[in-house]
Amino acid sequence: MKNISGILFQGILGKILSGILGISLIWTVISFFIPLNIHVETVSVVLGLFFFFRNQLYREFHQFSKKDFTLLSIVTLIIMLAGSYYPYILDHFGYYIPTLQWLTEYGLVKGISNVDLTLGQMSVWHIFQAGFSNFSDPFLRINAVLLIIYTIYIVERKNWIHLCFLPVLLLFSQSPSPDLPVIIFSLILLNELITGNRNTTLLFAFSVFVFAIKPTMIWLPILMFLSSVFIFKTYFRPLLLGILILFLFFIKNIWTFGFPVFPVAVGDLNVFWKPNPEVLKVSSQFAIMKTYDMQYSYDEIQKFSTGDYIKNWLFLEGIKSKINILFVLSLVVFSVFAWIKKSKLITLICISLLIKSILVLAFSAQYRFFIDVFFVVFFVLFHEYFNKKKSIIVFSALSLFFISILSFPTLIQKYIPSFRVGSFMTGFEKEQLYKPSTYEYHQFKTFEIGNFKFNVSHNYPYSFDTPLPAVTPFYIFDDVKAGIFPQLLDKNDVKKGFIWKKMTSEEKKEAQKVINNIKNTDK
Image (cartoon, rainbow, N blue to C red):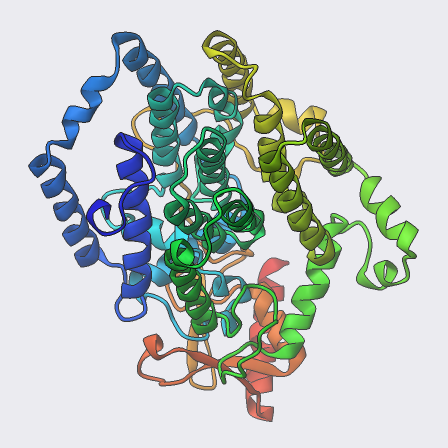
């Protein structure tokens, strides 16, 4: 990748970032044609090891002083400990693992969103994780590896404020959550921009890559584009690589979801494998209810006045209200800071964040969609204040706090019961010192409707280790309610993809039997 596109900056991390970008893009293209199985992983790992030793890249670690290496080692051990706990993010079971299963067994499947709408995302980060999940990282701890990489960047660039963020990010180390890479990459790119990196081509390309991992990060490519025009005075040519990445992102989404950007049904090319409109409508309504933490029904929300929309969102019951208020206050404080500073770069950062915030608030104002804003605002406000000593003190205190939460989750369950994620934490087990903790279930039933034979988890709402093809019970209910069901384009080849079809009277009877079976099992 260094020979093809250059590197964002010199040093170990510059090469690692280029490698992550290159592997992710190459595997995205490959996964259209073949699964990301053990053969793909073996070739990639062998090539990586070959160039690592051929180019003597290990010599670059000699640049670290004894103190730096000690700090790097201590932080790495803390990350490894945090990453060994049981995964607790619900998306791990409902979205991340099923996505990885489809990618490793089939690759990118056309119209997969007809089976399970969330699978239409197929994040580029999950493509990256899937390629390493056969034998290199079977416990799916790529995020813990990324945190170690981030630590190398901190030590290498001597930008110590980033140490303050690491303890919070430990909460994302047990699952391949795309939230972690987009926060880390955005902070790295922001740091490079502030410290004077003028490599417009790669700054914009990496920002689009971050957007491709999680589209709610749209502020980052907007910022890089505005910076290239108003600060660097460059225009089309340096943006070409980023535009090509964006084009690949659109193609990937159209292939799996039917529209250019998941989950927005905009830019309709009328491909025959796009999801059923009724299913999209239900999904949109669910997203609106999630905005209000499921505390109001969709019909109740529709009756809100403009004032009610704002007031009820700001004053939800529980911790979500505090997060929402803090989000608004952060934007206000940062806007005032940008106005006082009158720095062109800070003003562009503020404009980009405001654009992103408006879009998120318009579609689904869930706190997980704007959590990155807190990191960015804190970084810009305090990056000149935190030296090495202050950062290490904050890192040590916060690491102790968050490791305690992971080890003794009853604390957060008792004192912050409205933070539902905490209720799925299970605490420390001595076995995780030598093997990362994972769940196994392996209970499912097999059904058939039309030409589609599928598996459904037994007495559990998610299909995280159900053999493929698997369908989540929630989507079975939605499909049957809409009078449709996913069908194979080729009954003998799952890789050919899926469409939805209206059910015949006989298929409706079969579908009702499936629903009755699931409901009786739940009882």
